[in-house]
Length: 343
Ligand SMILES: Nc1ncnc2c1ncn2[C@@H]1O[C@H](COP(=O)(O)OP(=O)(O)OP(=O)(O)O)[C@@H](O)[C@H]1O
Image (cartoon, rainbow, N blue to C red; front, side, top):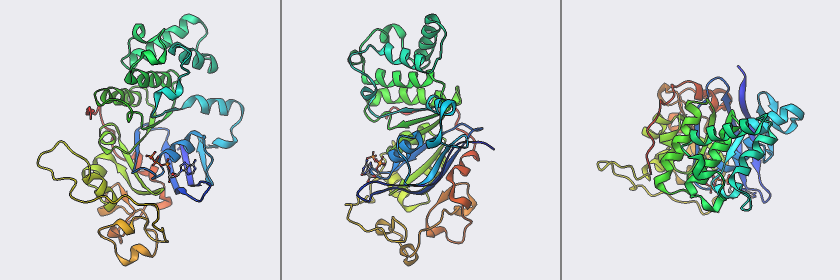
């Protein structure tokens, strides 16, 4: 089966020696578009994973393939297709706007560069459709400069522009973290719609497990550039198996008065801890055992479930072959029109 995207044993070491990604293998199936959250604390490697997927950064080791071809060797039509079919939304919607151009320019430029329309009328129709599909009124947005729009409108414009290109893969890196809580739900609903109606696979990069839970089908939890836990979002968030995920979940202020949370302290690493050959989380783990300091744990399937956790607490259980967490992401039914919380 053709994979849309494949990261094979990708490692990224930045100048200065920071290992941002450590031997990650992850694929996205072309046949089952889904919303996949990439979550973890600050510095866990989420944005690096996004930038590598977009081809903006080259891996130090390993390969990134799009429809079977190395993205750094694409030329001509294949390169053009990759640039059109793989789109990005970043945290700061202002960053993509030139303040001297009206927002229309952003759309017309995309239409021209990617030859999406044969006439001005057709271009106009495509723009109006894209705006309306993310809940924006063309008469309230077109003809304006970026600073004349709200943060939420600007971010929805970026979603609309991505939609115009009909991408197959959208990398959304913290798309709602600079937006008011009241608008967050609308933008997340727009993203969900891109998947449900337009069958676009979305990599939703976030440090926020609450929005990840509401918008995603699957989740991959990163810690220091390695996958700690991955699987369908319902199992991982509702019943985390890795001690790191358990700590992360325990720090979420769920709107449930019966639930006690925040009782376990999350220790933010100070950057001085030495990562040895064992589990990267060993020095923070409440369940640490001697084996944890000896070798990296493989990704185990706890209790025969269809998600994995890189933790020796599950030693003896089957392990994920090839370590490609993407193999898990076609196994569980998608969320249907999931409700999205405002905050
Ligand atoms: N250009 C760079 N040069 C050197 N180190 C970098 C560079 N970009 C990222 N890093 C380091 O790589 C590690 C992973 O960074 P990355 O931005 O991918 O994490 P993140 O999980 O997205 O964090 P955040 O949520 O804070 O954005 C961090 O230790 C970071 O300091």
